[in-house]
Image 1 (cartoon, rainbow, N blue to C red):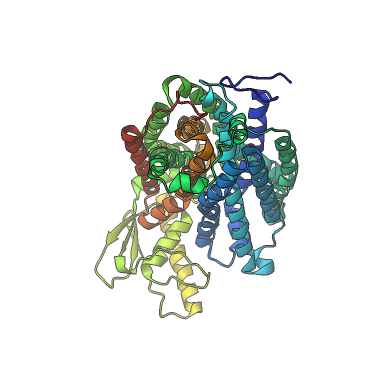
Image 2 (cartoon, one colour; image 1 turned 60 degrees about the vertical axis):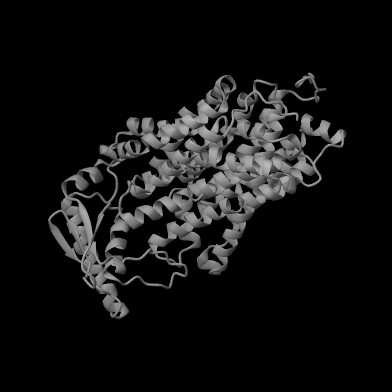
Length: 551
């Protein structure tokens, strides 16, 4: 194999293309494993949280999904330290084994109906293992590729790592769709396990590929010279000079990048399915089409960042997203399920209730019952996917729902026996659904009225913003920190940004929507975070494209 010189240092006997391919392909498989859960959140909720009511199942499935993101920063600390002490190659070999085995065991895990509460507990434990592994994976792959890249091409080379997250999601959608077509109705019963079990094959391929790699030339040279860090965590976070860079990387780069990424792909997918009631297969095909069209732009914007800088490309993506999210998502509603828009315009829905009787309806144990008239009214509307306004009335008043000019009274259920409560709930639900039907609110999207080309275009715009913020981010982070603590220093802000700011986005945004009744109100979360990153990044974060990363 041809020998390549890198910034004047002796080269390893490995080509740049092989380094990029091996690092990227292994990371694709890791993201595939991680995103299977997100793509199957509704089914996961029914399988492992069946002790909860229908509305809470998806919420807790999303929270379990977020649990994996919650522990990613801890994975960054653990594996970042190992990567700076031992080396890049062996660290991300360990992470991929943990990730693959955790995913495989999700496919074997008995459901709630078989082993009760142990099922969701074990599921969350496996999700946390996945998160820990992913916390160490990304920093290793990005650092490894950047330290092989020639000067002036780090943005281009590391952009291929950025593609892996989208390819992983894309691959997971294709496998899920293939299993659905093959198994039909059996998919929801047991066929959903197959994509998880198939990860064992992907794990074997990934480990084989990673074993063929040699150590990063920059790290190997530093190790040979005895200049590696003896305390990466202390040097990264206990010294203000580097800690300040970590904080700027978090708030001025990765937080905004993360919310744009997750809003453009995961939140859009949930919005199509849960809010607009577009069927799951169509939703996945629409997202897959937008990803297929938009993915090459990761490389385009990575290359562009080598020319004009990382900062202008990433911050422009944050600003464009913040300015256009509301019109784009309103357009998605208009072209995806115009029935909601038309009904909302002609017969707006308002919940008139005493605010003191309205609660955040999250049922941790599955045994609680929300019996106030406000909760009954809102939960019924939420199950139907109907947007509504809130209007306060006098304390102690029984809630009622206005559908246009039609009023439907709810009821107070606290003093009712279970049979009476069930009977009145059924009567109220029938009356409210009848009023909604009369007003034209659709129970699900009508495919004949959906404009799929326009939906794909709008979803592509969301993916385009993702490519702007995500394509250059790896190079930007790598260039911010010195070699001996690079793995540790860059991994933590990346995974706090993506694991916490981004990973919690679906749960936080849907919580905001449920609280307000406005189907677009959840967008305020990514908009505010993206604007924060734009301002902090613009004022305080330096451009790095020309720095020497061997220091």
